[in-house]
Length: 347
Image: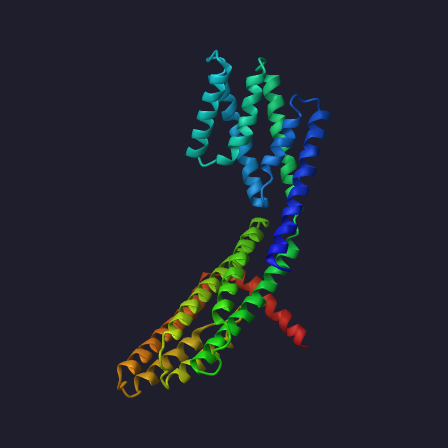
């Protein structure tokens, strides 16, 4: 399933959540006999965000900020005779304080509460309780509807993305090796790289959404992995640009091409890159023993080859940094268990 199709499905589900949650909030508020019952539906609409974590954060911020809004309302409406001017002062201070304390998500809900203070002359404890219940019902419905989330399908998509990205990286590396061997220059490597970069942008976004819909810390693994592959893809983009600048391929290009093919076989999720770094050192040492270039053209070509090897080293180092950034829990969950599954499938 493509990322765009998933986005469309998520949009439909989000719209359905908002519609159901808002309607349910209005029904509950009306059943309880609350004034401005429709505002409960508006608060639900404003509180439903893309992930569970964000929804809980927004809910907590709005509940806590409610009491500050009540104090602010009592400090403006009774003291300023002109209602509309009082509302303007109320909104000004609300927006200002929300930005200062980093709770901009509360502005819309607090503005709704502010209009109720504007429309009502009764600012009794009963009125405040009515407003508080509207916020509680509206935000609670947002939390409830956002608990309905297809985490398993998201996880499955991310695992499919990992396999797809690795397959595309191997394909691009093979095409670059063929280019260095002067075998087949008809393939559109540039197009393949750009397509993979675009895919990885969607994958990173999707990984963030998946983490936001779970309450564990370990799903950050997918973000780290996709960001690592994105950086590697960017390096391949630059590497391709270096290759096409070579006017005449030196004979040493064959060695570099062989190393790219060697690396291609290690593009998989739980690759430990120590062996690839040793192989790179060996190749650099062998190239250092080659006779010096005799012409400027040979010198330029050799220099670009060394630059390509440095780019390949960066790709390996990114892999090593990715592994170093993982916790033991993440390795246990995403590597060890998957290795067991792979072994079981092979039996």
